[in-house]
Length: 240
Length: 348
Image (tube, rainbow over all chains, first blue to last red; front, side, top):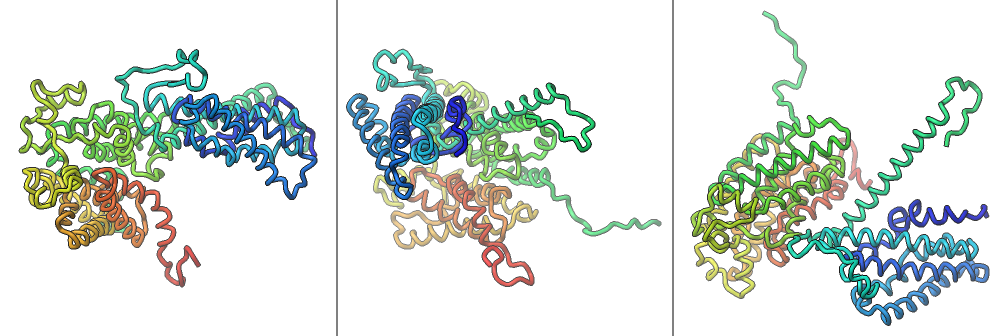
């Protein structure tokens, strides 16, 4: 196997370069269905992160014990156990949020992002890296859920973090922002089409930023090392 | 005497986007005039506002994309989109909804997909559905046709209504608004009334609603003009209206007490406008002849199904958008056989 991935690159992958929602396009079902508000997105994202971290660590620990022929059923069993635990936890401590998210918490089992990380990363890496990968991928996914939920909530009903107290306790009531009763939001943002349009715009934004960064980097590289005019048979120095 | 040699084709008109769009705008005139006659100045104000916003948005996005602005604005395609949108929405729609709708149509539905020729959906209908889903109340409040209204809304009153949301002094909504024929029919049928009882209302003309059927006649006239000028072919409009009439006719024959006469479906709502001006959008419709027949007939059937059993009174926008999605697939399976080949080239 190749050299283990450095920690910084694992974090960068999780939040940006291989973001599960914006680049890998995994876990779209809960992503599109539960992001009707920033609070729902945050709740769903944190639940997914918890499952992802626990399953990554467990899979990494048992990776030498499980025969490759049966690894997928074993991974699914591991994930399903943790999802059940998380579901019961949410039901016990955040009951209102549990009612809002409903079926989508048990459906975390089928979130491709989780089995994807178990198969692609945790089953091939040491526990510390698997743990970090779970945290980075989970929080990267959560970030997209919160941004998309916030966008849809803001455009659709003119509020932000409405009912944040369901998730974060009464102290978070001050976090809620509202444009007031007179705001006539575009209802479509909260309905399913708004989820697809919003996700499309977010992906486009990410690609735009990547393109800008790349172009700026290449301009800087060209400035730092002016291209040699006479190369002939000599190999040009690798640029970037 | 000199005889200049000109190669063929002889006597052809340049078939360019701007000419086609100008012809479409010309063909819309009779229907738009009828709408202004029956529903007042709000129609004209909406058209002016929508055209301004659409052209500005088109120019702005082309500027952002670093493309030449002149040809994109000069081809009138944004103007046609704006006019089709403006005559589909109520003449009292608040100005900012028209603004949102046109921005949605031009920026999201048209330019983000690559501009004219690349949009999979009809921009005007996508904007209409966007507003209908988002603001159902404002989008279904229609003015009463002129001769039925207790109070005729003047030009300045229309301006105040659209830009300030202020009703004329001493007048309630009820005095100037009325249910559209499709709304009236749906509502009364849901209450269990029979067609014969419903038709007693002064709202009705010969086939559709009073006033409304003349608007449909105006668009029919424009549609015939487009056929005569060969801007569109007969396939989509005829198959769409025929499918709608056949479906409506079958149910009318089964039970004439609860299903309206087929002509009601043709001359109410946006059926005629949709058949000649919206479903025939050359970008988002099918291109093969067989495909166009399937495309049009499916829209007609969907219009009947959604009008009769669906959640919204009119269905042309939904039906057109649904079939826009299917258009590439239909085109793929209806490729004409190339001379000399046997069998279908798409599925050898």
